[in-house]
Length: 615
Image (cartoon, rainbow, N blue to C red; front, side, top):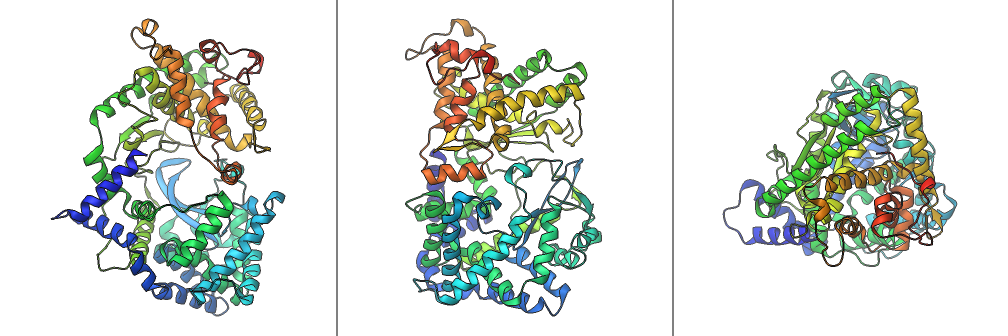
């Protein structure tokens, strides 16, 4: 990706530049430390000692002092970014988007998802996982070890059993997509009641946030069953098992930043065994990712100053407004929607906020004290603590509507239902999503479809439950909602029928993205046809404007993916496989069939009665 090469050049240039700004110096120091493998090897585990010592103190306190035990678990998250048992963060209240609160989420697992603990086809992965835990625990005692000790193998079995108990109460990925099922607002002081007072959540919050339950006020517990199970497990686990669990969680969290033995073992399990990746990324790419994670907007500000093209932003904004106009037209003509629902939908569409390029207000990194004399791991812990503190400030506070959830150098886009906004970072304005040298047909098929995709998320199976203000409020009549769901069910069944190495796509898990892909293409094509003189546009390279539009879409989905990674994504990813995302919506669109004269014998042909049309 061109943006990665640009970032590499930028970071290399900082190392040669005199008179760096404060943020430039922090970015340069962090990247240099991340590249310095020799210094990381020499440091070995010395810099992990404070973290590992805290793990020991926590396990000792479990049976001595319930409040101190919980408070130190919170400190583990706040100071080191290690989050055993569950996670906390901040985001807008689903029913009051102007106010943000503490979100408490299920967590504590070392495998990617609860299904990895239960699916029959993942038994080999579970066996490999237990060995991986054992090796990491062995490395904490002996960084030069090549095989796990018998003691660590036994400890790994106990750690796995603990995680299995947590996983039993976790929601599935599909269940986690339901904004109503994951909305359980309560006073922070009431959380302890979920676990029958067995775990002191109030003291945990003090350790994790520095705030009392009174100061936190309302919180949202996304999965109450999971937190009830946390209280049971955390309050009853034997001290030695707890210690091994905390040491394992620490090793897993820090492994990419430690010596080669930890890096290689982490890669071997999480990338090679789970995803089928044969070769670890070169150090500069990993160092750049670490730097982006720690100082993302500081690096993004430098990236935009050097590489962002304001002319491209202007063209992109025109595409956005054209697609918005297409959505307005579509909402006005949808036959299955009643007038009351239509009026509310148009109001929501009119309220879309659009962000392109970079934030108007950048993150202030003043309190992130990065010095070139710090070790790499010290920098990582400082960056984690800084980001955690930013999250804490947003708990029980007015929502920051200027905040971005992606950095400008990220090639991606998003729709945020609580903010009713669509966001397109600077780096997406490059091929294959946007090509300044290409004609509008190609760019509307790529960038236009991305814009339409994000807008359609406001009306997908999840986004439709939020109103124009970003509040979870049902604005649909019962009849319209029923008709909508019947159309969505067709898309779910289409996805269920798609196979990846013999396994079916999860239609319910991916339906939001599938709705957005189809809607995005339809809206972008409508916007393209509205362009002046479209009917007389010439052929280019033997393709009509409509054909070029669909080819622009198709080239966005080229990829190389291993079998293991493809199967892993079936479990984890709410996006469908790229082949389905490319071809699935096209087979539902009449203009595609007409443009390429698709015969009935083609795999791309779908009979008219089997096609679905929502947006």
